[in-house]
Image: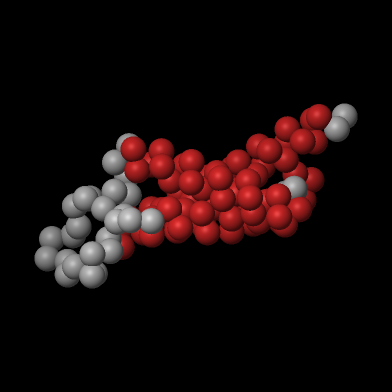
Length: 104
């Protein structure tokens, strides 16, 4: 993704994924702010890992004959949204698990 657009997508998707994970696993929730922050960090981390592996890169081969979307690769955007959401949710649950283990 060109410029900062990909990073912003990963941050937003990670925050949403973190809040979704916090709502689904209330025992490991860090509160809305905590879920958002940890989720955003997790989204960026997994998004960057996927990009380093070549998954979701803007240079991915598009479908044959597919029209250009103004420089935005739809496949890369979808990969960043899914990767950011999953990364945000996973890191939120891990951080909540660590927090709950430390309180015992």
